[in-house]
Amino acid sequence: MEKPKKIRARGAGCFDLTDHSFEFTAYNEAPSSQQNVKSCKGGGKTWETTGADPSRMISLKCKMSAPDQYSELARQFEALTRDMKPKQPVKQPDSHRVVSESGLQCWLDEPKAELTFTGTIDLSKHLRDWQAEVLKQVQLVVRRLPASERFNKVINHIKNGGTK
Image (tube, rainbow, N blue to C red; front, side, top):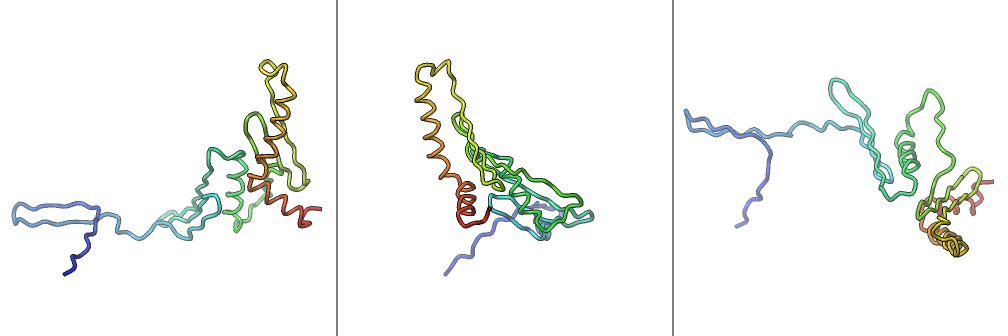
């Protein structure tokens, strides 16, 4: 004989001492307060609330290790608000940082099909071997760029004749 499954429920129990009865009222049995839920790549989410004063809600998510957190959040915002038409045009940044590590930053400008990278070297620490440090920065560029999903997407777009 199979045992019935136990179901956990949150709620409040009330014991009546006069007639020795017990009454249980469950919580969270109302219909969902979120409608038209949409999510995007990266973890962003948008939904509409129900109730007396409905609202549109947007939640954006970005990892702390992302090289350019602003551009990641801006991409999610743009994806989640694609169906909304602004009253005035909103300008998104053209240039996105694709690498930010060890004093090195790489910026990718998709419309211009340009890559700009800057490196910082502390000459007080590397006065004699500054050339070796420059070489390390260049090697870091070559290693980190292929690991950037955004960089690879833009490079493939350019290769396929997307930006001319």
